[in-house]
Image (cartoon, rainbow, N blue to C red; front, side):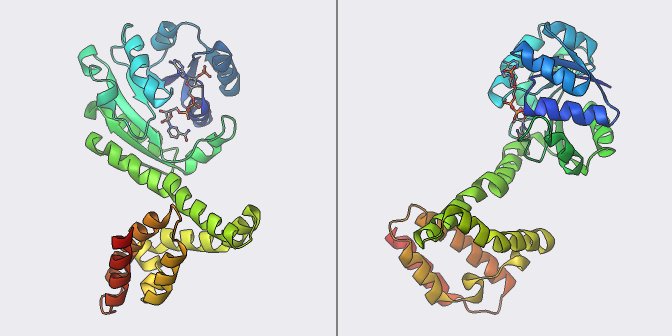
Length: 287
Ligand SMILES: NC(=O)c1ccc[n+]([C@@H]2O[C@H](COP(=O)([O-])OP(=O)(O)OC[C@H]3O[C@@H](n4cnc5c(N)ncnc54)[C@H](OP(=O)(O)O)[C@@H]3O)[C@@H](O)[C@H]2O)c1
């Protein structure tokens, strides 16, 4: 398999390096700025291309590692060349292969989305984390096993998902990473209101965050659940809500508390959460 990349950014650099380190040959890079393609080529010991057509003709698989909004327009360019029997791939977590490469099969090509479920934040070092990541793939069923087999041997795992699930899948990833930042921001802000500096707040929260994440990953969110909602301490929760008056995160607290209460009821079916329901219902009616 010879893989070429259009878009020499974080994922282009990282996936290319990961492939070369694992026996998959990389032809090289074409990018918006030739300097990026040249830098990626040096990094991966491959070639910089200045003509897209040349990269396409010399590669079995072409990875469009451009930003999501540029995938379709890049494909429009690509399909003016001979793409018969080529694997056309992108790495977006949110977009499916069929919506980005709608006529790939009609042109004799095979379209895939191949998404590493990990943040790729650095062009030069993130490739080291790809071996410990899950790759989620979907696309043309005809040869999806080629990608499954190729990646299975070099990373933590490969999961084939249905193309209709891409948005849902990406929302899941986003909730576990980006949206979690909103809860942390709110928590740090409350500690700052108590006189902590941001660094002190982060340092203070560190054991809580790490132990909680570890328990969730080990036992699942329901079993890992602790705290006043799970215990049924309705008065403590009422005090939380009172002190959030005027805080833009109050609605978020109430929504999250509602979900936590639901999970607490699953965990402790015999516990009486009547008073907790009352507190949350009353508070939500006041928002
Ligand atoms: N970063 C992540 O954490 C992550 C994780 C998983 C999947 N992904 C997916 O990977 C893809 C790439 O993301 P990224 O984070 O690598 O983005 P990025 O760092 O911004 O890199 C994108 C590169 O594409 C090039 N480019 C932009 N428009 C182009 C065009 N029209 N033609 C050719 N090259 C073009 C730019 O190259 P120049 O430098 O030449 O301007 C840029 O370096 C996206 O689909 C994203 O959803 C990202």
